[in-house]
Length: 413
Image 1 (cartoon, rainbow, N blue to C red):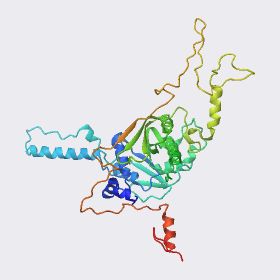
Image 2 (image 1 turned 90 degrees about the vertical axis):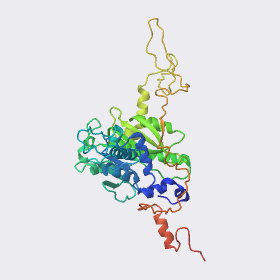
Image 3 (image 1 turned 60 degrees about the horizontal axis):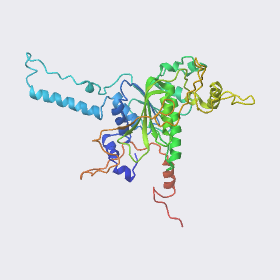
Image 4 (image 1 turned 120 degrees about the vertical axis):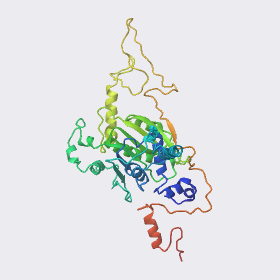
């Protein structure tokens, strides 16, 4: 958790320390869960780029300890209040056996409150060390390295053997298909430089690395949530994710500052294309074979040039999409060619797809861009978990070794 002046004015920064969260980003995951019910029927989770562990902390307290937050906590308090009111208005119902007891069964929405679950497996991965959390398996690994997937599957199931999958063709069922996970989370982001185009590009590459690992371990119907930076060509990213998931949403939690380009892509109902084989060695199932595949596709597409237009033995190829190939002449011998108009502004299948944008979080909750008056007796708390190995740790050690501390350096001469 940062200590800049902006962080100290942030209500979620203070609230995270008061409620025991390692970082304010915990509220982002809780607000996403309120909107999309991410934790429903989830027992196996992978948290990528997890340091300092705030999202893993949410998973531990919700899935393992059975705690409830946000909307679920409010529903639990309302249920207890109703039970107390029933005892006030009907104090003799326990002693009077002739009276019909008043039902205290909670409503269906209240039944959905999180409870401690059996067989929960949560694995957190990051290049930086993560302080231990109850019930969380932490791995210090690179999510772009091919050896990470067997390491992850072995952490989820110690009986998994990576040797059983070696040598199998993409058409064969790998052993890892029985070791799938329900939910993959990624809250990772690069150290921003202030150059928005560069930051958006680096973040997109980090997202593709997380997505490729998720494709290797997600089971059909699984969920994938990752941080994105909204930029000029973000629609292309949405369309690529739509290939693997039936539902794709862009969400902006209320705890995420409106001044930030940060958002979260929520992908539900994982359904890979037929014949798709995920591998870290071939990202997104294609890897370095993309130019070769495009050349093969152009060679197999129908010729769209009109008869007589090709000269000197040229062979037509579908390098553009000006029209559709004619199906053949009708009964009058007329060829009917349907020209596809790409200038239409309305979205069409195969032309453009726009993901729905959702704002998460209760409107009565704190606004992350607003400043709130503190009570007179307010006492500032220390962060719950200071950084274990921050990137600036070496710089602080060198400055102290040279006689300075933080912003103070010794005078020369």
